[in-house]
Length: 181
Image 1 (tube, rainbow, N blue to C red):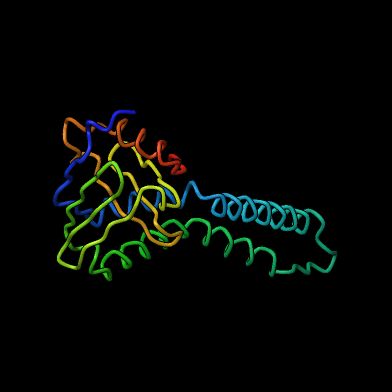
Image 2 (cartoon, one colour):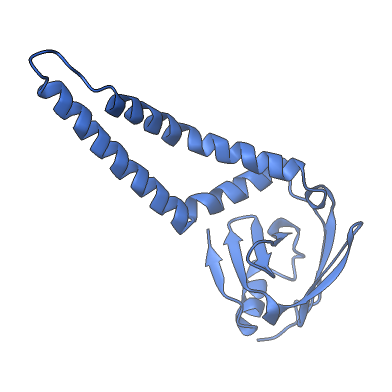
């Protein structure tokens, strides 16, 4: 692969609160743990609904009715409906509490490393040391030096000479695992 597109400067990258929430909510929805939790919640709610239906159809002659199943069903439905709203709220709070998310960063993509500079400091991460890269199309590429933190690269700010395909090829060349969300 030719590295003619590199080095490339990507200046003033700053995700807005709405962009941060949208990107991370999309990652949350695509997470296997989120899918598993939704599946488990759905199964539990279906079982509770069957239990409530059985209680309604097979009422005892004395009219006794156990309210625990309908109450649990209502709580589960409310939780299922409110969970995405709670995640959005948590993401917005995380964004608002992070000084780094409010500080523009200038990236330099070289053939050997991802370099960054902001008012908070400077870093240089060799491409091969990145754990993974996640494409959140169409606008963002998240580059993970660790499992818990990432750099947000705004693809809209790439120079015309450095299309996203060139960045993808560079990541492939350095054997950085890539995924899409």
